Length: 576
Image (tube, rainbow, N blue to C red; front, side, top):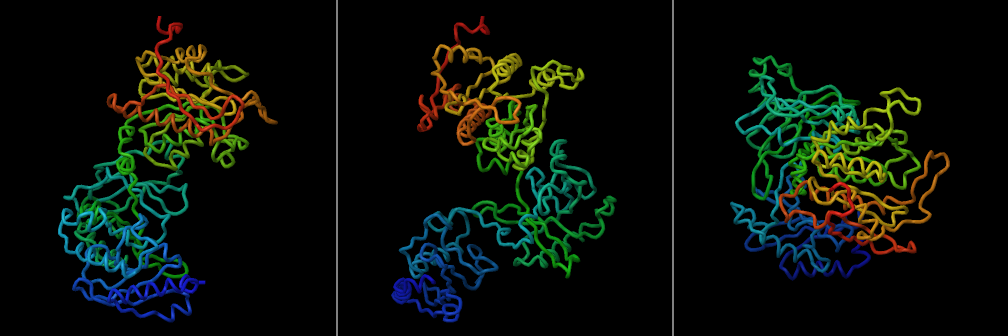
């Protein structure tokens, strides 16, 4: 039952409000009876402007506002070129209330809509007049398939003095639909002028095909409307102007083109013009009929683009981090670190994913038997394509040639670490292995690299996150002494928290991903604080934090973090 049938008084309220506001309306009876939709044609004069609005009410009215459309009278802002919708309210921020009426919406917002058209600058288009946001033309275009996109990096942005050229990239075969990663910009003669290499691990995981070149062309303005055929016609005409230069440079793509990356002026900030991008494809043969020209999305995914949503993380784009131990806790840390887009992640774990660890390892079933480092490399590159990856699988602490293996089959794990340490900014240790922790903390200290320990107790009743700073007063061994003498309170543990599932070669712990999650999150908060700090104001308040999730009897408690200000322990042998 439609809202106006279920609540006829609400409909009468709307009609009476329009009449009281001096606005006449006609009900579309066909839509009302046949489609159970309320559509009104409303006419009247508001602040000297006589207008007719077509108004459609949503099924969930009055919780959402009416959809108000009408003709384009040369409006420059807040009018959709295809649907004709007038944008009278900011979507979803409480501008509309169920107590409001269509008449109130028009009376209050239409004068602002008109004033916004007259405003000639951002200073005139004040927050009282309009929402302070851009209206990019690309949001109005209809795309052939939302899964098909060009992944764009702003570092490839050509200077305004250039009118055309080429973008080289690779199709990412791993994903459904056509996703194409832009990597290099070349001039009309084919000379590389900007770009980067994808990296060996990324190229292998993406199963990227051979490199492909797409021409780009600049238009002085957006072609009128949203018809891709009109866009293709104008873009192709602009390309023909520069094609002789391409032929002179003997560029293979100097012949006929079937797709063009088009850049054109559009809003990138509130009343601020920049350059928008869209891929336009020519008419092509299809089954069972010819496919007309189409648009494909260009999505900005460069490091600067990703950092816009968290500007404080921008320095991490130059940082290099090693994560050792990629189990239930370490895997979450890697996934969260990946979202900060570090320059490089070195992933170190000799084990494979096992499907029966699903309670702690996301994607365990799909990745069963895959080395953990490889599985997490997939997760990193499913998130963003800018972090370079190195995968280490040697089992630290084993003698090469042990267990009947060849002398070099275990791998030179110590050599791998020592080779990488000088280039690193941080080592994150989620191994929960005391011998490995001791070894990594000493190696990091000796090479002037920060070391961070992150672990949980059996049952994940409690956990600890600690940062050993390069040249700092307090080290991993100090922490151990502080734990032993209870300067750091006893970390609670499930007395029955160790199990050995059937078929498993070693005992493991009881615990869930959601209890490990706050430890992983705090680990990444501490890591990112260290990697971005420029002074005391940016510094994490504590270098050692403990978390309590259960009490001594194993009962759930409110998760409680406690920070510890520690000094060099007098019994620590590392400080003489």
